[in-house]
Image 1 (cartoon, helix red, strand yellow):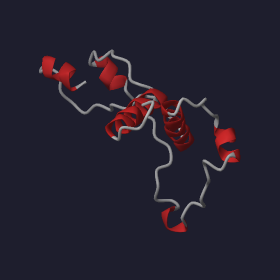
Image 2 (cartoon, rainbow, N blue to C red):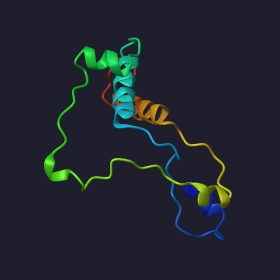
Image 3 (cartoon, rainbow, N blue to C red):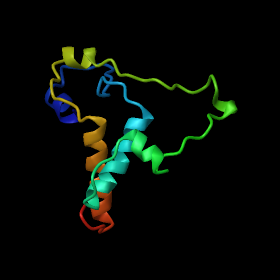
Image 4 (cartoon, rainbow, N blue to C red):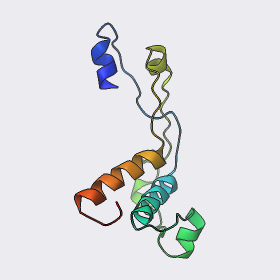
Length: 112
């Protein structure tokens, strides 16, 4: 995206650069779990299976953060698209998998 705007200096403004899709923390958690499972040549699991296995546990939301935490975000990328940026964004699953694979390879963990 930076290269797009470098190539189009006539464009300026404030642009949301999220995917435009809201996704939950569960989506991120299961993506991390499955990226690690994939590195170990294990089958992916769903959220309920991960909960049953005790891989995911939930904690109560802290009272001190209630009413102060933004628990939903979804970038409006309309301005970005109107500026001509048409490339697709990675999904959470794709981006997390790519990042986890990079970290696992750095650590020399088998299968990454």
